[in-house]
Image (cartoon, rainbow, N blue to C red; front, side):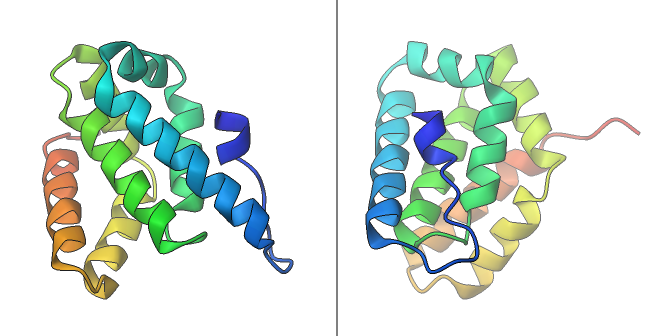
Length: 130
């Protein structure tokens, strides 16, 4: 699934089929992490790939992908395990928080703004090492 999520649609004209495939992969990943602890653990094991994929597609593919990425990050960062804390700290050290601020500014749906605000609070609880 991560291979599909990492599909590069690049600067060339985006194929609607490629966008739809990425959206489906994001929805499946969202379902996987939302419905089982095993799904979360699998994401934590591959955290660098998951973080990279979510960060690369956030604000770049479609509104549906952005919303799914926010939901995935919220579930994983909101988990109460040590792995989740490490994951959330790693996310907070990437460009994802600044992209989330942009989403907060441009999102038209209040529900999206609320989810982004919650995720930013979760990320703000993680203090990077000096």
